[in-house]
Image (tube, rainbow, N blue to C red; front, top):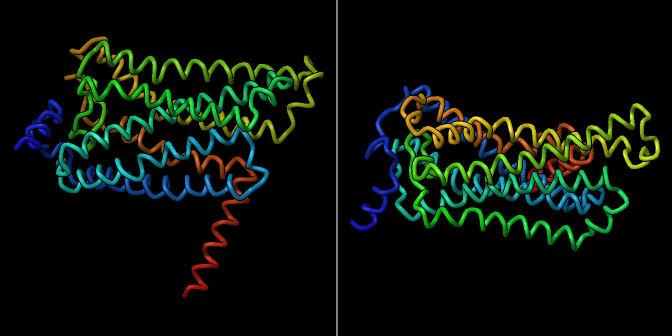
Length: 320
């Protein structure tokens, strides 16, 4: 009874038991999107981690953030997404209060860890291209590992308040236990600003400075810095820039909705459920994109993907 009462607190204002919010074809589509996202997330990010481990050309200090980002993406695929799929199949949360809290906590860890790692990647690329003389000292192997540790320490620090303000609740619109934007307007504004707007601003500044320098070099305004911006350096920068752009596109709708509702709570009832759900699943989908971007834009990752997949296929045939 006590657990049931706790779970009751975790339900959103949408109702005690989730009613059929969407037609069966829409629910099937959402389940299909989540299944594909989970599968590509797990396979893709494991390939990323293995590629960096196996390929000497990828085993660079800066790629510690890439591995860390892959771990952040794996967090949601291994626990919260499967529980969300169970909720879709049952049209309700049936896993209990503890799973709800752990799922919401890991979801938050993944999201915040992702944006903080993307910020770390942007700062790393900025220092590498714009402050090349200081880069080797700033981003030695030991220093970079410390920075990655700092990223996860800040991620934990950022997510911990959710445990004390009771903001992790089940929302039947997205079939997930997640951050409830209606808990506190002030807290929601702080979350969106610190977890999204501030990192996006820092990353935008870093990449803007890089683009300015790249254009100056190509126009021969600064020919003295040309040796540092080699073709493969530019391709690596472009890859990480695309990771940032897709993250911003996928997560912006949900964060803007939360920010607007926090500023004017009356808007909450006027936002269509399908728009809220679409923004959430669009954000979920982002977790499987990074590995695809690396394979599409980075030759070393693409080559290592093929080698790993070929080796696994050979082992599978030998086993048969």
